Amino acid sequence: MPQSAADLQTELLALRARKLAAAGIRSTQFADQMTAFDHPDLDQRIAAIERQLAVSGRGSTTRYAATSKGL
Image (tube, rainbow, N blue to C red):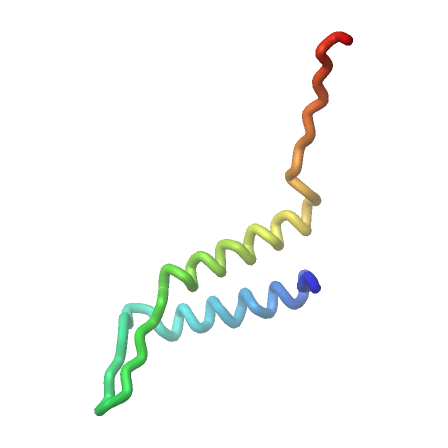
């Protein structure tokens, strides 16, 4: 089921907050526990949501071409 614009906006805000919280940190380690942050994937997801919101606000960007072979 596609997400609504409100759901996408909520997810976008959460992802931006997560990115801000982990800014400048690549990984952390304490004893035998390690956490690595995946910033490129986070950036890609944020960009994808921003594109979805842009398209939902202005409509589809799909274009169709009509051609004829003269028959």
